[in-house]
Length: 424
Image 1: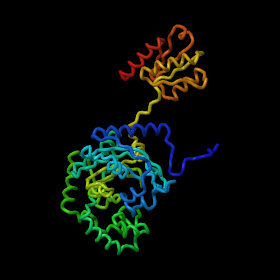
Image 2: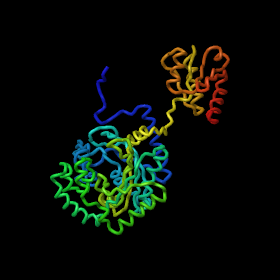
Image 3: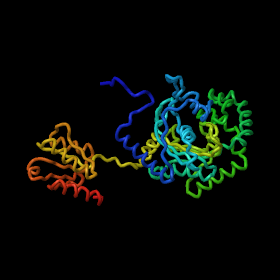
Image 4: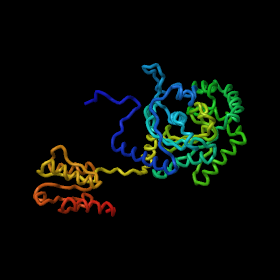
């Protein structure tokens, strides 16, 4: 039967086992963030539209074509957040976090929204986890942000990726570059796609984001920012790269790498995975030394990154990395002609001991209950009822080892715990 309702295009329900993989992935990410001294921050899904126009840039694709924006009943323009950095900086300013000392090291996770053409690894509602280091201009901060992604990938047993990195310069050294790039692009306009023609006047560096094969070929003759970097940007970039080398993180210098948000300065990077097609950028970020100032604060350095949860899971699947442990309940309680209250007592004793437990709620036969125990992934089955129940005992079956014992419930619990602790 076809369902009456379905999820909106570009969205997806998260059900087991994908939901459990996502939970464990976020747990790994949280572990890495906290090892580096980052603290959790949570911001609203809804923000003022102007926050994103001001921070991301009014000429970006995100603002022009992809944001979910509406006017509420009070006449305020609101947007479902398309990215996580601007809301974190807004909260940093609004909550006065700078008064707690700098740098502020914050991490977040949650849903983001962009109205893009849906495909594998690209949804209209997607999940991100990210980290922001606010207050430092030190290139070591850039290296730290990048190394967190590398650490997480090691935990996930992922290997087939390339770290692409570039310096997109500062406001000063970009002036001459933008002027020369615009001049060069003016002569290329007839050969560029419609989108690149628009970018060439409003946001010229974004032309390097284009995936159109003809544009990629034409732009091979366009100047790159690396030839225009000022002395300070060169020194910053080289120090970041040196830090990566010290940490043993391989990288590829990509002179044409730019990010799709206007607030980036100096360091920009992407972790790209093999075998994921067009949506192969799994983790990305960079430095944003003017964003705090743009949103009303004092000049403050900052650097951060985010990773796409769905894309990380695709990478795990593509590499068959298997970093997740998909376990069912540990104990299934099967009843034979026994009052339900007795089953409840047994369940409570087991759960009070810190062991997950489930039982049959469908009035199945013992044979069917054993099949259900296998289906929910239980290793142990406690069979309550019959003559054993009259003696105050249960039958404990180890489905993995094909063994069974007749014991009191407390003895059965002790045996289960012993096997767990010894890894048997």
